[in-house]
Image (cartoon, rainbow over all chains, first blue to last red; front, side, top):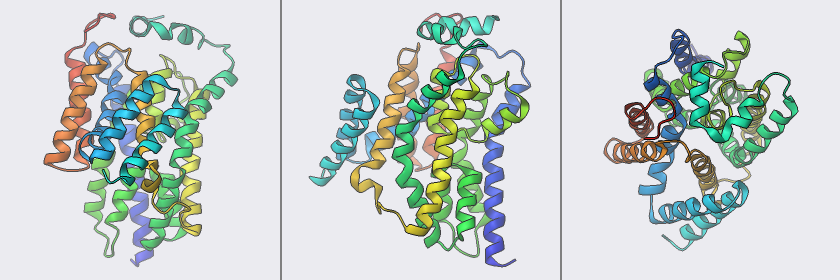
Length: 101
Length: 254
């Protein structure tokens, strides 16, 4: 196979793999008609657990600018609607990076 | 209403009005409007990342069709960038597939969590809907979806962010990125801020703080000790393990 064909084959394979991941969790749970309490609680926690896992290293151990900006963002998110929060976050991290933190 | 639904309502008293009004007859326009309001900030924030992906794909020697097809079939930004980093011929198939599996493992959980709320959809709608579940959309589904996720609401959050990603990949492929380095103007942080805002919306849930603390601790420890992308899986596992371990019946707070 030439390089172009290989590219296409791998891209389709990655698409299949990614769809397989998305649908597999659903297919497993769809077989269980009544979820037990702990499974329900675990699934309820999915977005909070995964999103925390995505942002924690950036917020905590990437650099001083990111950590301070993350704290500013949390405070802003408590006080402000979403759009001003995003602006505050972008400005905070840009300024802090610019001053070399 | 069955026992499971009642239990869920007890856990989220603030959402009772919303869930009750999701009964048949509810105006779908209201769901679409709410969905668009919820998703548009992250759609705007991810425009440059889609364009950067198209630009990088072009630089890595992918054709236009390949690049757009990759965004359309995978719709998983982090995994796509990870794959491109390894994209040298002869292609390391195994390494690329394993990397994508590692980065995208969290999607198994998203499919499972979303699946509980779409039992009333037709089968094609269920499989199509799950095919585009991603980080911001699962958060919104869990936050606003209730027991029976509105198809109109889901379409309004899922379609804009999906189409944006695919179209911006195509534009970025040709024109290059208008913003060469999204980090330079803090756009990477805009995405983080969106997630922080979404996380705070979950704070009223019993035990949410313990999930956050466990997930953050495990994620950072794994990030430092092993490296990316394994911190996604370990943080998620720690968070949901705490939630499962501290689960109490019928709205009891932990």
